[in-house]
Length: 116
Ligand SMILES: [Zn+2]
Ligand SMILES: [Zn+2]
Image (tube, rainbow, N blue to C red; front, side, top):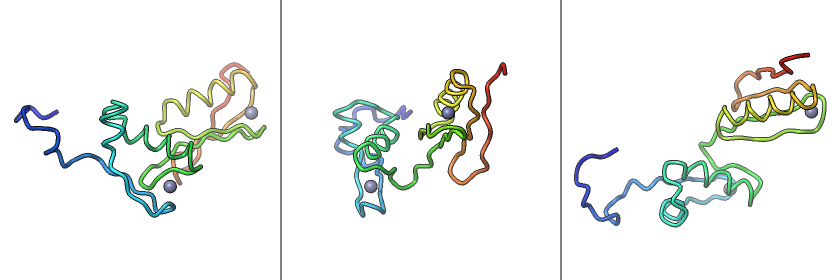
């Protein structure tokens, strides 16, 4: 990304991404994700998934892709469209069920089995 001043010590980097959660009333910087887990530009995603795993909810500013099966209780939440759609298509493929895929408050799109 930056092609200048590559020798800057990392301590001087003040653009470590931060994540806030109004439910927890907390704010985190992602230095741990970047330094310890080395997840790079997936740090926010990694943090959000970990946060949900441990607290049951996503932090602020994360708009999840929600997949809900209309015919059974299956459903999952994702941070990107691709895995959400893949999950929905896989579920449809194996079960024949129709699923709704929704991003935040946007309109739901339907995923159905390719070969009925
Ligand atoms: Zn939280
Ligand atoms: Zn189903």
